[in-house]
Amino acid sequence: MKHKLFAAILISLAVATVALAAEPVTPKLTDKLSRLLQQEMRSIQAAMGTIHTAMVTGEHEAVARNAQQIHDSFILKQSMTEQDRKDLMAAVPNGFIKLDKEFHKLAAELAEAGKMKNTEKQSQLYSEMSRACIACHGEYVSDRFPGLNSTL
Ligand code: HEC
Image (tube, rainbow, N blue to C red):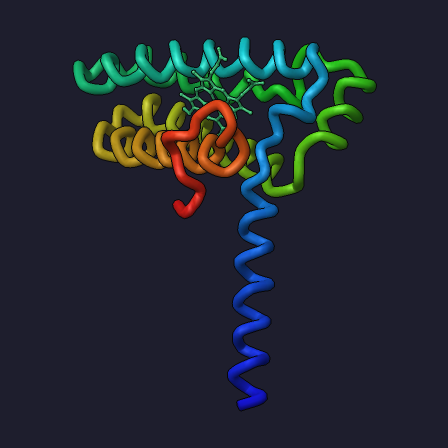
């Protein structure tokens, strides 16, 4: 009996943690960070569209170039002052930074697959990158994208 109660408490704690993790980061961003992120997101979106066309038409060099551009756009490294960096770290949880890093690492791998003219690998990485968009938006941007639930 005690065990069951204990298990129930554990489960409710776990559920509470998941709910906390799904809290959107957007309201915590400074205006400047929000603007920078939105700019970065729009250029990523444009590059993903270009990559898709290039990938399905065998334009490997364009796949490589655009994927490299996504990789280099890493918001943590670019056009951010020391203060912006501090603001970002204060606004977002570690999981967000981790997802962002993983996403940019996938972009680097996609650039490599472009250089290797490996269409199969490009397609696989493209899907993985799309999953990363959904995972981050579902977990950290649920206020703006309520259509994505955070159970992914
Ligand atoms: C690590 C987290 C993360 C990843 C990965 C990510 N995004 Fe986003 N995205 C955000 C955040 C945060 C916002 C909301 C920014 C705001 O409104 O302040 C956003 C907003 C956007 C927007 C709206 C931009 C606007 O004009 O307001 C688009 C489009 C977008 N993302 C596309 C993508 C695409 C495409 C991918 C994957 C190829 C992607 N994102 C991957 C975090 C992420």
